[in-house]
Length: 288
Image (cartoon, rainbow, N blue to C red; front, side, top):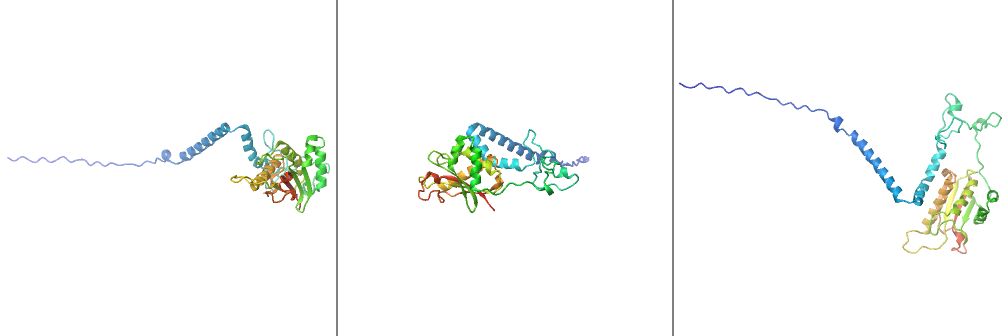
């Protein structure tokens, strides 16, 4: 008798479903940006720490002086004050680049000078007092002599200053002599006496608003072959150093029309191009 075939059991069909979940919160790119900013900030911090440790006081002073013109201009042209909290009151003159429009109370939108009172001294139609734009060589010399008469040491330095009326305007030449030099030899580093003299000149320059042209001059003494420095670079560097000192002494950088180095092409003494007096700085107050 034949056996009956036993049917095989039915195998279940298993369907595997894979659900792709959104992992954007974990694998997104926002954290990478924040991390990159953090790493950049830490790199800048450690670079600053390294610079502070690798430089001496004189080098740090030089770095600070390099950025001084920008900082000075920012202080002069911003609306903030120079006090403890750096703010300004409603009586301070408006120093924003664009005046506020007349909306509501005019005294609040366009502050007037605190010196304006009700005693008849107010400026008519909002006109502001402007500085004079002309000064002759004799007037400048007289004023600087009066300024220095109480300081014999600085008054002696006045012999190194020449005043000349030119087509461009009043030119002030600060010249080297055997017993006085503005800069350390073959460098653009101002000496202390020269910086003091420029400071005294700056006080009078700041009483007018003429644009300024600063030129650096050298003698004809050549540099040895193979040197990277030459008289053109030296005269330009000295003109730049003089401009920075004027700005440090309070003269607005916005008044600088040109800063030039002319090497030995415009000698003070054409008959002797090696004369010490050919090494000088010229500050010209332009006239319109």
